[in-house]
Length: 109
Image 1 (cartoon, one colour):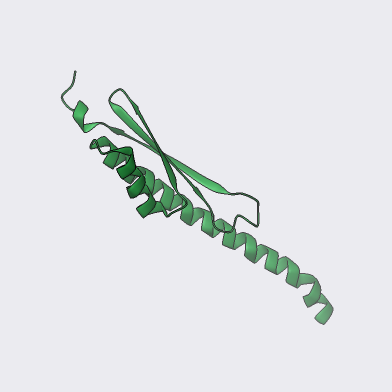
Image 2 (cartoon, rainbow, N blue to C red):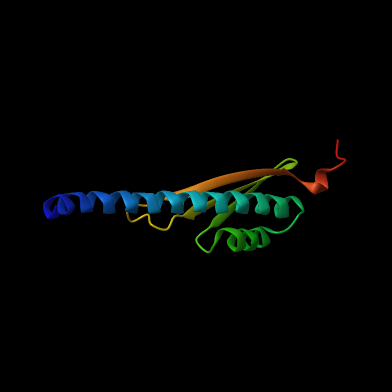
């Protein structure tokens, strides 16, 4: 019994560690998607990129960075963040993008 436990225990620990990384990545992805959506909403209202960064950091955490790209009547916000537990699989990050119509463009031809 002891020999079997000694052989199986590292495999169980490895599976549990992988599960923790997957759950952390899923949670980070949800936060990044929400942050991109909130950032696009703020940017579409005409707020500055600094204000967008502030909103993104509040929603996704301090490791998140936002990129704002305005093209025509659209604004696109891309958010990137690192995942806790990336030590298990190397550097691990998540990305999300949200697009919104600029409110200043409402009624424009």
